[in-house]
Length: 397
Image (cartoon, rainbow, N blue to C red; front, side, top):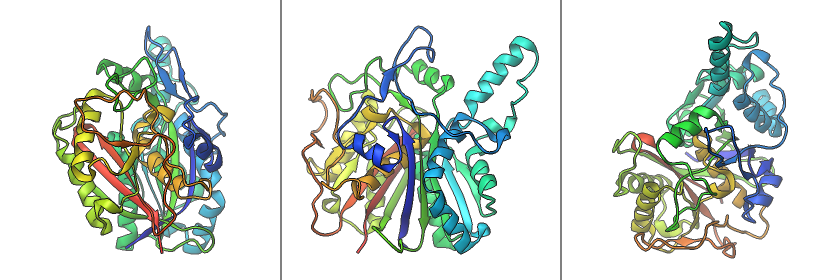
Protein backbone atom coordinates (compact mmCIF):
# COMPACT_ATOMS: atom_id res chain seq x y z
CA UNK A 1 0.00 0.00 0.00
CA UNK A 2 1.23 3.50 -0.86
CA UNK A 3 0.93 6.04 1.93
CA UNK A 4 0.49 9.65 0.86
CA UNK A 5 2.11 12.59 2.66
CA UNK A 6 -0.49 15.27 2.09
CA UNK A 7 0.64 18.10 4.38
CA UNK A 8 3.84 19.18 6.09
CA UNK A 9 4.55 21.60 8.92
CA UNK A 10 8.09 22.15 10.12
CA UNK A 11 10.34 24.36 12.19
CA UNK A 12 14.12 24.14 12.63
CA UNK A 13 17.25 26.30 12.61
CA UNK A 14 16.54 27.11 8.95
CA UNK A 15 13.25 28.79 9.89
CA UNK A 16 9.54 28.08 10.16
CA UNK A 17 7.28 26.82 7.39
CA UNK A 18 7.93 25.22 4.03
CA UNK A 19 8.88 28.34 2.09
CA UNK A 20 11.33 29.71 4.65
CA UNK A 21 13.01 26.38 5.31
CA UNK A 22 13.27 25.58 1.59
CA UNK A 23 14.87 28.95 0.85
CA UNK A 24 17.68 28.15 3.27
CA UNK A 25 17.95 24.46 2.52
CA UNK A 26 18.72 24.76 -1.19
CA UNK A 27 21.24 27.60 -0.71
CA UNK A 28 23.19 25.84 2.03
CA UNK A 29 22.31 28.43 4.68
CA UNK A 30 24.16 27.64 7.92
CA UNK A 31 23.42 30.95 9.64
CA UNK A 32 21.14 29.23 12.15
CA UNK A 33 24.09 27.35 13.58
CA UNK A 34 25.47 29.68 16.22
CA UNK A 35 27.93 29.19 19.12
CA UNK A 36 26.06 29.12 22.40
CA UNK A 37 27.31 29.12 25.98
CA UNK A 38 25.38 27.83 28.95
CA UNK A 39 24.70 24.35 27.65
CA UNK A 40 28.03 22.65 28.43
CA UNK A 41 30.28 24.01 31.21
CA UNK A 42 33.28 25.91 29.84
CA UNK A 43 32.31 25.19 26.23
CA UNK A 44 30.57 27.19 23.52
CA UNK A 45 29.71 24.79 20.68
CA UNK A 46 27.44 25.70 17.77
CA UNK A 47 23.82 24.66 18.21
CA UNK A 48 20.89 24.68 15.82
CA UNK A 49 18.38 26.65 17.90
CA UNK A 50 15.03 27.90 16.63
CA UNK A 51 15.38 31.66 16.92
CA UNK A 52 11.81 32.75 16.21
CA UNK A 53 9.22 33.16 18.95
CA UNK A 54 7.12 30.07 19.48
CA UNK A 55 3.36 30.00 20.16
CA UNK A 56 2.07 29.36 23.66
CA UNK A 57 0.72 25.85 24.12
CA UNK A 58 -3.09 26.08 24.52
CA UNK A 59 -3.07 23.48 27.34
CA UNK A 60 -0.93 25.09 30.08
CA UNK A 61 -0.41 21.86 32.01
CA UNK A 62 1.26 20.44 28.89
CA UNK A 63 3.62 23.37 28.36
CA UNK A 64 7.17 22.57 27.31
CA UNK A 65 9.49 23.94 24.65
CA UNK A 66 9.22 20.57 22.96
CA UNK A 67 5.45 20.91 22.70
CA UNK A 68 5.81 24.53 21.58
CA UNK A 69 7.95 23.39 18.64
CA UNK A 70 5.40 20.72 17.79
CA UNK A 71 2.50 23.16 18.11
CA UNK A 72 4.26 25.63 15.77
CA UNK A 73 4.55 22.89 13.14
CA UNK A 74 0.97 21.70 13.66
CA UNK A 75 -0.49 25.20 13.27
CA UNK A 76 1.02 25.41 9.79
CA UNK A 77 -1.15 22.51 8.63
CA UNK A 78 -4.12 22.91 10.97
CA UNK A 79 -6.65 23.35 8.11
CA UNK A 80 -5.60 20.02 6.58
CA UNK A 81 -5.72 18.36 10.00
CA UNK A 82 -9.20 19.71 10.74
CA UNK A 83 -10.40 18.58 7.33
CA UNK A 84 -9.13 15.05 7.99
CA UNK A 85 -10.86 14.98 11.36
CA UNK A 86 -14.11 16.15 9.79
CA UNK A 87 -13.80 13.57 7.02
CA UNK A 88 -12.82 10.53 9.07
CA UNK A 89 -13.81 11.33 12.65
CA UNK A 90 -11.49 11.88 15.59
CA UNK A 91 -11.53 8.16 16.45
CA UNK A 92 -10.00 7.34 13.05
CA UNK A 93 -7.09 9.80 13.23
CA UNK A 94 -3.88 8.59 14.92
CA UNK A 95 -0.86 10.43 16.30
CA UNK A 96 2.52 8.68 15.99
CA UNK A 97 5.57 10.78 16.88
CA UNK A 98 9.24 10.36 17.67
CA UNK A 99 11.24 12.19 20.33
CA UNK A 100 14.24 11.61 22.55
CA UNK A 101 14.00 14.54 24.99
CA UNK A 102 10.29 15.32 25.29
CA UNK A 103 10.04 17.89 28.12
CA UNK A 104 13.11 16.79 30.04
CA UNK A 105 14.42 20.38 30.05
CA UNK A 106 11.42 21.46 32.13
CA UNK A 107 11.86 18.40 34.35
CA UNK A 108 15.53 19.19 34.94
CA UNK A 109 14.74 22.81 35.82
CA UNK A 110 12.02 21.69 38.22
CA UNK A 111 14.32 19.24 39.97
CA UNK A 112 16.96 21.96 40.26
CA UNK A 113 14.47 24.27 41.98
CA UNK A 114 13.32 21.46 44.27
CA UNK A 115 16.90 20.74 45.34
CA UNK A 116 17.45 24.41 46.13
CA UNK A 117 14.15 25.26 47.80
CA UNK A 118 12.43 22.01 48.64
CA UNK A 119 9.50 22.89 46.35
CA UNK A 120 8.70 22.26 42.72
CA UNK A 121 7.65 25.21 40.56
CA UNK A 122 3.92 25.93 40.78
CA UNK A 123 3.49 25.37 37.02
CA UNK A 124 5.42 22.09 36.90
CA UNK A 125 3.57 18.91 35.97
CA UNK A 126 5.30 15.56 35.69
CA UNK A 127 3.41 14.85 32.45
CA UNK A 128 5.47 17.63 30.81
CA UNK A 129 8.53 15.38 30.71
CA UNK A 130 6.87 12.05 29.89
CA UNK A 131 8.05 10.56 26.61
CA UNK A 132 4.41 10.32 25.57
CA UNK A 133 3.89 14.07 26.07
CA UNK A 134 4.02 15.18 22.41
CA UNK A 135 1.42 12.65 21.26
CA UNK A 136 -0.71 13.27 24.36
CA UNK A 137 -0.67 16.99 23.66
CA UNK A 138 -1.73 16.72 20.00
CA UNK A 139 -4.44 14.18 20.84
CA UNK A 140 -5.81 16.34 23.68
CA UNK A 141 -5.66 19.60 21.71
CA UNK A 142 -7.37 18.09 18.68
CA UNK A 143 -9.67 15.83 20.73
CA UNK A 144 -8.56 12.69 18.93
CA UNK A 145 -9.32 9.22 20.24
CA UNK A 146 -7.39 7.13 17.73
CA UNK A 147 -4.04 5.51 18.61
CA UNK A 148 -1.61 8.08 20.04
CA UNK A 149 1.91 7.16 21.08
CA UNK A 150 5.56 8.14 20.91
CA UNK A 151 8.50 6.09 19.67
CA UNK A 152 11.86 6.78 21.30
CA UNK A 153 14.71 4.99 19.55
CA UNK A 154 17.17 7.87 19.73
CA UNK A 155 18.06 9.24 16.29
CA UNK A 156 15.69 6.97 14.34
CA UNK A 157 12.64 7.84 16.47
CA UNK A 158 10.71 9.92 13.96
CA UNK A 159 11.75 7.84 10.96
CA UNK A 160 10.25 4.86 12.76
CA UNK A 161 7.16 6.98 13.48
CA UNK A 162 6.58 7.36 9.73
CA UNK A 163 7.13 3.65 9.20
CA UNK A 164 4.68 2.83 12.02
CA UNK A 165 2.12 5.32 10.73
CA UNK A 166 2.09 3.61 7.36
CA UNK A 167 1.65 0.25 9.06
CA UNK A 168 -1.42 1.48 10.96
CA UNK A 169 -2.96 2.61 7.67
CA UNK A 170 -2.14 -0.73 6.06
CA UNK A 171 -3.82 -2.59 8.93
CA UNK A 172 -6.93 -0.42 8.70
CA UNK A 173 -6.55 0.76 12.29
CA UNK A 174 -7.05 4.37 11.21
CA UNK A 175 -7.62 6.50 8.12
CA UNK A 176 -5.19 9.35 8.76
CA UNK A 177 -2.08 9.77 10.88
CA UNK A 178 -0.30 12.83 12.22
CA UNK A 179 3.26 11.56 12.15
CA UNK A 180 6.74 12.99 12.51
CA UNK A 181 9.03 14.04 15.30
CA UNK A 182 10.12 16.75 17.67
CA UNK A 183 13.13 17.37 19.88
CA UNK A 184 14.27 20.45 21.77
CA UNK A 185 17.68 21.54 22.95
CA UNK A 186 18.45 20.63 26.54
CA UNK A 187 21.49 20.41 28.78
CA UNK A 188 21.06 16.70 29.41
CA UNK A 189 21.46 15.87 25.73
CA UNK A 190 24.33 18.22 25.05
CA UNK A 191 26.28 17.13 28.11
CA UNK A 192 25.62 13.48 27.31
CA UNK A 193 27.15 13.81 23.86
CA UNK A 194 29.95 15.89 25.32
CA UNK A 195 30.72 13.06 27.74
CA UNK A 196 31.02 10.79 24.70
CA UNK A 197 33.54 13.30 23.27
CA UNK A 198 31.29 13.64 20.25
CA UNK A 199 30.47 17.39 20.22
CA UNK A 200 32.46 19.63 17.87
CA UNK A 201 33.54 23.17 18.73
CA UNK A 202 33.09 24.08 15.07
CA UNK A 203 30.26 23.72 12.59
CA UNK A 204 30.08 20.01 11.84
CA UNK A 205 31.99 18.81 8.79
CA UNK A 206 30.45 15.54 7.49
CA UNK A 207 32.68 13.09 5.60
CA UNK A 208 35.68 15.41 5.76
CA UNK A 209 39.13 14.25 6.74
CA UNK A 210 38.86 16.99 9.39
CA UNK A 211 35.51 15.97 10.88
CA UNK A 212 35.55 15.99 14.66
CA UNK A 213 32.00 15.56 15.90
CA UNK A 214 28.39 16.63 15.83
CA UNK A 215 26.39 19.77 16.49
CA UNK A 216 23.03 19.41 18.24
CA UNK A 217 19.86 21.13 17.02
CA UNK A 218 16.14 21.27 17.70
CA UNK A 219 13.22 20.85 15.32
CA UNK A 220 9.70 19.63 14.69
CA UNK A 221 8.39 18.08 11.48
CA UNK A 222 4.80 16.91 11.20
CA UNK A 223 3.15 15.13 8.25
CA UNK A 224 -0.46 14.25 7.58
CA UNK A 225 -0.40 10.73 6.12
CA UNK A 226 -3.41 9.06 4.48
CA UNK A 227 -4.27 6.35 1.98
CA UNK A 228 -5.68 8.96 -0.41
CA UNK A 229 -3.90 11.39 -2.69
CA UNK A 230 -4.36 15.11 -2.28
CA UNK A 231 -7.52 16.21 -4.06
CA UNK A 232 -5.59 19.19 -5.41
CA UNK A 233 -1.93 19.94 -5.96
CA UNK A 234 1.09 17.66 -6.01
CA UNK A 235 0.88 14.27 -4.32
CA UNK A 236 3.99 12.88 -2.68
CA UNK A 237 4.25 9.48 -1.11
CA UNK A 238 6.20 7.28 1.25
CA UNK A 239 7.11 4.69 -1.37
CA UNK A 240 9.21 2.41 0.78
CA UNK A 241 10.74 1.93 4.21
CA UNK A 242 13.28 -0.43 5.68
CA UNK A 243 14.56 -1.00 9.20
CA UNK A 244 17.22 -3.12 10.84
CA UNK A 245 18.63 -3.61 14.31
CA UNK A 246 22.18 -4.89 14.29
CA UNK A 247 22.61 -4.30 18.08
CA UNK A 248 26.34 -3.84 17.53
CA UNK A 249 27.00 -1.53 20.49
CA UNK A 250 25.09 0.75 22.82
CA UNK A 251 26.53 3.91 21.22
CA UNK A 252 28.98 2.97 18.45
CA UNK A 253 27.84 1.89 14.97
CA UNK A 254 28.87 -1.38 13.36
CA UNK A 255 32.07 -0.32 11.57
CA UNK A 256 31.28 -2.56 8.59
CA UNK A 257 28.01 -0.72 7.92
CA UNK A 258 26.15 -4.05 7.68
CA UNK A 259 23.04 -2.82 9.49
CA UNK A 260 22.90 0.37 7.45
CA UNK A 261 23.28 -1.57 4.22
CA UNK A 262 20.56 -3.98 5.28
CA UNK A 263 17.97 -1.29 6.02
CA UNK A 264 18.68 0.56 2.74
CA UNK A 265 18.25 -2.71 0.86
CA UNK A 266 14.98 -3.42 2.67
CA UNK A 267 13.66 0.02 1.78
CA UNK A 268 14.45 -0.55 -1.90
CA UNK A 269 12.83 -3.99 -1.84
CA UNK A 270 9.78 -2.56 -0.09
CA UNK A 271 9.43 0.11 -2.77
CA UNK A 272 10.14 -2.31 -5.62
CA UNK A 273 13.09 -0.21 -6.77
CA UNK A 274 16.67 -0.80 -7.85
CA UNK A 275 19.54 1.34 -6.51
CA UNK A 276 19.87 3.08 -9.88
CA UNK A 277 16.31 4.40 -9.51
CA UNK A 278 17.16 6.55 -6.48
CA UNK A 279 17.78 10.16 -7.54
CA UNK A 280 19.12 11.52 -4.24
CA UNK A 281 20.16 10.27 -0.80
CA UNK A 282 20.00 12.37 2.35
CA UNK A 283 22.80 10.92 4.45
CA UNK A 284 22.64 10.50 8.22
CA UNK A 285 26.04 12.23 8.09
CA UNK A 286 26.66 13.23 11.71
CA UNK A 287 30.33 14.15 11.15
CA UNK A 288 31.61 11.76 13.80
CA UNK A 289 34.55 9.60 12.81
CA UNK A 290 32.77 6.26 13.17
CA UNK A 291 29.33 7.12 11.77
CA UNK A 292 30.63 8.71 8.58
CA UNK A 293 33.07 5.87 8.03
CA UNK A 294 30.47 3.13 8.30
CA UNK A 295 27.82 5.04 6.31
CA UNK A 296 30.21 5.71 3.45
CA UNK A 297 31.04 2.00 3.29
CA UNK A 298 27.36 1.04 3.24
CA UNK A 299 26.33 3.66 0.69
CA UNK A 300 29.24 2.88 -1.61
CA UNK A 301 28.53 -0.85 -1.42
CA UNK A 302 24.95 -0.26 -2.58
CA UNK A 303 25.21 2.74 -4.89
CA UNK A 304 28.88 3.11 -5.74
CA UNK A 305 29.74 6.76 -6.28
CA UNK A 306 26.77 7.47 -8.52
CA UNK A 307 23.82 8.65 -6.40
CA UNK A 308 23.95 12.36 -5.47
CA UNK A 309 23.98 12.62 -1.68
CA UNK A 310 24.44 15.14 1.11
CA UNK A 311 24.16 15.62 4.84
CA UNK A 312 21.93 18.52 5.88
CA UNK A 313 23.18 18.58 9.48
CA UNK A 314 25.60 21.53 9.02
CA UNK A 315 22.46 23.64 8.40
CA UNK A 316 20.29 22.33 11.25
CA UNK A 317 22.46 20.43 13.67
CA UNK A 318 21.59 16.86 14.60
CA UNK A 319 17.98 17.11 15.78
CA UNK A 320 18.06 13.62 17.32
CA UNK A 321 14.51 12.26 17.69
CA UNK A 322 13.26 14.75 15.09
CA UNK A 323 16.02 14.07 12.55
CA UNK A 324 14.35 11.24 10.64
CA UNK A 325 11.17 13.21 10.00
CA UNK A 326 13.00 16.49 9.39
CA UNK A 327 15.28 14.99 6.77
CA UNK A 328 12.35 13.17 5.16
CA UNK A 329 10.75 16.62 5.06
CA UNK A 330 13.80 17.92 3.20
CA UNK A 331 13.21 15.22 0.59
CA UNK A 332 9.53 16.29 0.48
CA UNK A 333 10.57 19.91 -0.08
CA UNK A 334 12.97 18.85 -2.84
CA UNK A 335 9.95 17.57 -4.80
CA UNK A 336 7.62 20.44 -3.93
CA UNK A 337 6.64 23.73 -5.54
CA UNK A 338 9.13 25.42 -3.21
CA UNK A 339 11.95 24.01 -5.33
CA UNK A 340 11.04 25.05 -8.90
CA UNK A 341 14.62 24.70 -10.12
CA UNK A 342 14.88 21.11 -8.92
CA UNK A 343 17.91 21.83 -6.74
CA UNK A 344 19.33 19.23 -4.38
CA UNK A 345 20.31 20.11 -0.79
CA UNK A 346 24.02 20.93 -0.98
CA UNK A 347 26.65 19.16 1.08
CA UNK A 348 28.27 21.91 3.15
CA UNK A 349 31.82 21.01 4.19
CA UNK A 350 35.46 21.98 3.74
CA UNK A 351 35.78 19.70 0.67
CA UNK A 352 38.71 17.85 2.22
CA UNK A 353 38.01 14.20 1.38
CA UNK A 354 39.05 11.51 3.80
CA UNK A 355 41.29 9.12 1.82
CA UNK A 356 40.31 6.31 4.18
CA UNK A 357 36.67 6.49 3.04
CA UNK A 358 35.24 5.35 -0.30
CA UNK A 359 34.23 8.29 -2.46
CA UNK A 360 30.60 9.43 -2.55
CA UNK A 361 28.88 11.76 -5.03
CA UNK A 362 28.47 14.64 -2.58
CA UNK A 363 26.21 17.41 -3.89
CA UNK A 364 28.14 20.62 -4.60
CA UNK A 365 25.10 22.85 -5.11
CA UNK A 366 24.90 22.56 -8.88
CA UNK A 367 23.22 19.18 -9.27
CA UNK A 368 19.50 19.14 -9.97
CA UNK A 369 16.77 16.57 -9.99
CA UNK A 370 15.72 15.46 -13.42
CA UNK A 371 12.23 16.29 -14.65
CA UNK A 372 11.64 13.15 -16.72
CA UNK A 373 9.82 10.28 -15.06
CA UNK A 374 9.13 9.70 -11.37
CA UNK A 375 11.71 10.91 -8.88
CA UNK A 376 12.64 8.92 -5.76
CA UNK A 377 14.62 10.21 -2.80
CA UNK A 378 16.00 8.21 0.12
CA UNK A 379 16.76 9.39 3.66
CA UNK A 380 18.94 7.51 6.15
CA UNK A 381 18.68 7.57 9.94
CA UNK A 382 20.97 5.57 12.23
CA UNK A 383 20.78 5.44 16.02
CA UNK A 384 22.38 4.13 19.18
CA UNK A 385 22.05 0.41 19.68
CA UNK A 386 22.42 -0.32 15.98
CA UNK A 387 18.90 0.90 15.19
CA UNK A 388 18.65 1.81 11.51
CA UNK A 389 15.89 3.16 9.23
CA UNK A 390 15.80 4.20 5.57
CA UNK A 391 12.81 5.91 3.98
CA UNK A 392 12.04 6.48 0.28
CA UNK A 393 9.82 9.37 -0.76
CA UNK A 394 8.78 10.20 -4.26
CA UNK A 395 6.41 11.35 -6.96
CA UNK A 396 3.46 9.17 -7.81
CA UNK A 397 2.08 8.62 -11.28
